[in-house]
Length: 115
Length: 112
Image (tube, rainbow over all chains, first blue to last red; front, side):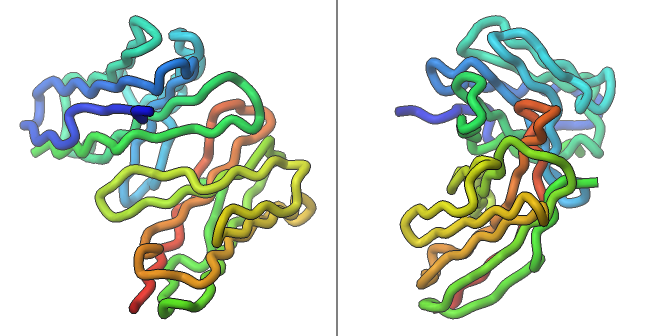
C-alpha cells in the first residue's frame, strides 16, 4: 500500500513567494493532518480535516497560511507570502476512522527553506 | 508547552545493549503513541498503547504506560546500529481527538 504522499520533498524559495505543499492521504483514510516541525518548537499540529471538512485550524500560525481539502484524496497547504521563519519541515498525516486505537500515518515531509 | 516530555534528550549505547527512554505528559489521554524518525526522514509509527493498557510488545519494543503517574517508557532490547534515530512520544488528549501532542524526542545513537 502506498503511504501518505507529499510533494515537493524539498523546496527553496525566496521571501515573498507563494508556496504550495501537496498531500495525498492513504486511500480510505478520512482524517488528514498537517504538522510542522522545527528545531525550536518541535512538532506542531497546524490543522486537521475530517471527511474533507476542517475541524480545527487553531494551530495555523497566521493568515498567510491556508489549507484546503477539495476531495478525499488531496490536500494543500499554502503559504502566501512566505517568510524565512516559515522554514521548516511540513508533514502531512492521515488516519482511518475515529477509533481511539487508530494510528496516524505520516508522510516523508516537505522540507521548506525560505531565503 | 509540549504535552509529552521525553527523557533523556540523548542516549548513546553500543549494539546489543538495551535502550530505555521515558515520556511524561500532563493531561488525560486516549492513547499514547511512539514514533521513530531517522535523520532527514518522516515519522514512522512504532506502537500505540491505549489508556486502559499497561504494557505492549512489538518485536524488540516494549512499551509501558502508567496513567496514574502520567508516564510511559519505551524499551528497545538488543539494540542495533539501525535503531539510531530520534524517538518521539505523542499523546492524544481525551478532550482533543486527533490532536497528537509530541514531545521533543530522545536522540538515540547505537554504535557498532
